Image (cartoon, rainbow, N blue to C red; front, side, top):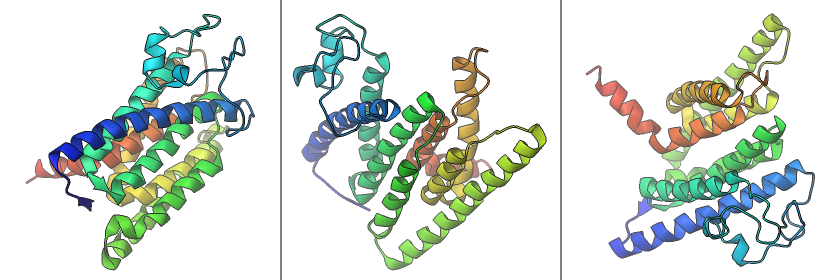
Length: 266
């Protein structure tokens, strides 16, 4: 359910949301780094981790500051992590894609909040092999808060709530059972509790049908990331980034993919 806007307003909002997404990517990256370093997210200004130089406002402009500084600290010349640039760019494009897909409305706002949390999940899990429960709980609160605004009517809200609960039980509970069985057979931890809870939370958003697509894409993406990054050096690989990527893709294009697939049998 979205509001139809004039063409000029859509162009303006598209540009605005791209830069808002880039800013959110910058903030989430900084917050994730501080979480990993056990530092307060809200206290203190950003600094160069090598020389301690306090970054000015111009050095914090998403995307452009990295390009103008050529990926180096202005004070000491230390390289700025390239993931900062790509995270800002990808979040800008993701905010834009969400707006183009769902228009100006509550659904877009709901998914922008969820996608921002999933970015934090991916970054933190990649660095620590842990998914904070707070981020999973935040996603749950987003689903509850937007349940009626997303649906637009009591009947649609009830149907979405039921489908979401079935999705959470099927994919959260199913992954829990599978994880326990694999742990028993292989005699080692195969899937972390954070991954299971993340699947359960995302099952609320995807429901039963799209949740199956999310699960399939998670496995494919996880395998691809593991093969491209591990390079035979690590026995374990964080699954959170793969789940996040699969969930975002499913919520943006899952319905279209399922409809296309079903049309093949007609």
